[in-house]
Image (cartoon, rainbow, N blue to C red; front, top):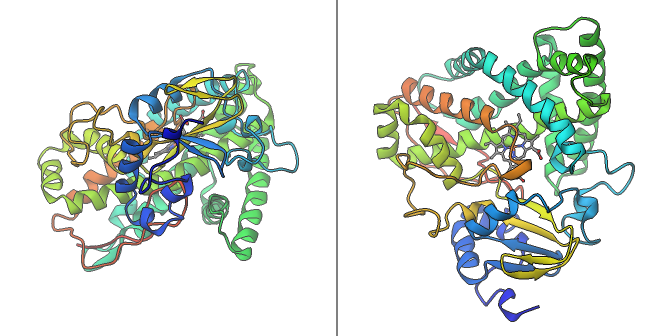
Length: 410
Ligand code: HEM
């Protein structure tokens, strides 16, 4: 390995140093990410047996490149990526998140088609649900915006899209919150128990829901998928439908919560930007893109080399994982003018907060609809919303960036 792939003193040496495991990076990862991008843009993290890219062009080229693979079982033993798969059972069975072609395209295509058609049809209903949640929040005093709005909202929306019965919504929320604990490697034994119980209950619930919707379809995504199967328009097995509907649930929750929380925090700490959005609500779409660029809810994504080759000008070996800092790429001065400025009037951003290429986030259109409507509705309902004195606590979940609490005064 060439010397210049070893991070110089002062530059982070390990992928975990850049994550919320490190209290300094948890508070503010951006100075560390800058020193990585400037000092060691193609970094080798030997203990975790991975590469880490941080320049925009390298990240963009890599996510778009279809010669990489994604399933963690292709990764070198002992690498951070190989640790992502369950070592017991049939670990090739995963959602599209980790599948490779031809299975990835076979499942993603009909799922995306049905999901997008449904989001488009349900847009007024989604916006009405958002209004309902926000209208129920306090009209005066102080409250935690995460607990009242950002956390409950995405799970309610996805439950309605999927077709979860109203009467089971509370259970559904409890189970999905349990499953989300799988993203926390430091979970307590009690949390582990809650995670396992939630996962088992969700499996059981979705299996039953599919049987019911096959017998009597309703106006929801579960019905759409079982009907596509029945008409032979989706060559997808039952457990594949189930796994991927659950992936929509888990993939979209915390991420959208953080897009809401990070966005409101940024608007309140940049009052001129909030004023610009109040005065020009048509800036909402650009505001969402700028929040995604500036404080991406998902910090990293990864691919795996299928063969020996050069990546970002550096020789690499088959089965080596390549992780990419989406957060570092999104503030690369070679790609963005004044990258450290939060500016919702920025015209074209082209950020990589949703990754890219064949695995680009399938939920991006839904996240955008939700965030746009939430930002506008909150600014309209609370003309004097501000941040009272508080110590911000960022979540200690590696690879995600979001707030535990965000107390607002209205
Ligand atoms: C702000 C909100 C969100 C962010 C920042 C985000 C970010 C990401 C990223 C970075 C990836 C990996 C892309 C890659 O490696 O190229 C991804 C994939 C994925 N996301 Fe999202 N996501 C968000 C919202 C959602 C929502 C709302 C859903 C579902 C309702 C969702 C479901 C998924 C799924 C299923 C995948 C796997 C797609 C595939 O591999 O083909 N995400 N997301």
